[in-house]
Length: 108
Image (cartoon, rainbow, N blue to C red; front, side, top):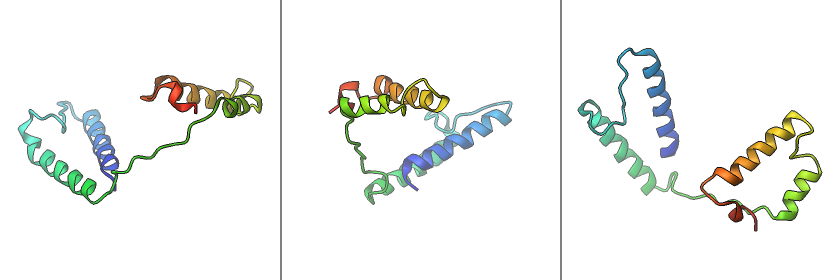
């Protein structure tokens, strides 16, 4: 598995442990000596996986032109006519406005 996937699995385990434990703890807390060996092992595994090229590639998506966006709206793929088109529109607009990339980078 790529490092990000392993990290998310550990986060899921952490969430279950917090929910079921009256004294919650943080596996990722650098100050907690109980998890120092675990954290060191995790970092070593992640570094090896990155060195081997697993999870190291950055996937770039193609930009959406203003014409393509207009087509999505005009065909009802994005819109407010149905719950699905509204969901798609909200997801798309959240991506444009709140992601790390600025909206202009999404448009070519």
